[in-house]
Image 1 (spheres, protein in one colour):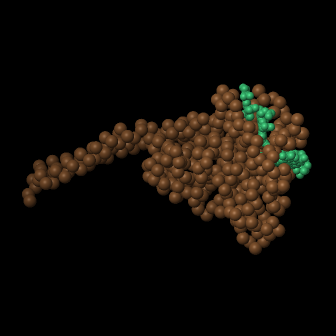
Image 2 (image 1 turned 90 degrees about the vertical axis):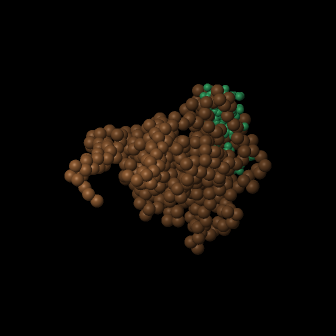
Image 3 (image 1 turned 120 degrees about the vertical axis):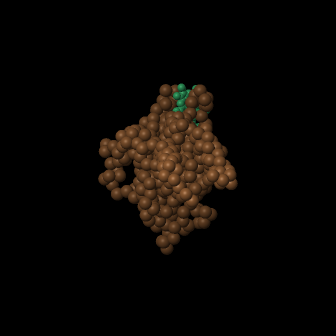
Length: 259
Length: 157
């Protein structure tokens, strides 16, 4: 194989030009440009957080009813964005847990899963409302292969119904089991912190529905906000801290039996 | 270059061009990174507004006073004042235009959500509400036959 000087220069020029074509497909942004392009989507200066005071919950289930009706989650389907769990602990350390229909109709029967528990054996009993933790570090968003679920600038994880392909990765990824398939839209569905209400200055439907103040929502970045103050000054816990998801739903009076 | 090298090359280039073309038409213009991190904020921007524009259905107690003054007043000074009207009557939505009227749920289940006796220790918040045993407290009759739901301290007129 022979290679003249002329041919070598020609090929080098061609090669350089060809190599620079794909490079021009990338845009290099200055720091200012990239900041402008990544403008936050939510209410500025806001990070929504939630408080659940399990000491106050009586298990009436009005929060579940309100959530389902407000957010058009089919009422009689066994799926719900928020639910209430009942825990009954007996003298021998056993715990009984149930949440019939997510607690939608309250807890009116002392029997748990058909099992009679002798009242004198019960050492403690309590109700624990659950909902999406709107994690700071949400695993459900990281696994989405199509960019259908995301975190807004004010910290709420939403699902784009027109973009979700229904693969179910996010449902598997959530350690709290708060995601499910919407039986009508057939896409991943989850609590939105009632984004349509909080962005209008209202409270979520479940917070408004609770007669006992067991649920509260507020802006964690506002030092005057009652929720931010509780998180800062009182002893609060989060669910499954060891997963590193940094939940933004804080519990008062959380028991070790709660999973 | 030889033909058998070029031909598959054209096929590959064609496939890439097709992919870019499909992508151009399928992916909305506002799809991209809208936030701090690529990992968490890669999405269609207008979806945030889709969620913001979802309809509010629960309107709150303040709306009702305009037309149901009597009920609101009875309710406001009672042991039940903490219970939102819409918990018992369902979401107002655009009431009284649509729906024209709200449900009157006179079932015992509505009241038993809070009043059914559960045999739990006094640390349970439920114990602050006067309990009744649904199987012994006038079974078969609606609670509102004898109790005013808006002000349970009052006799039913």
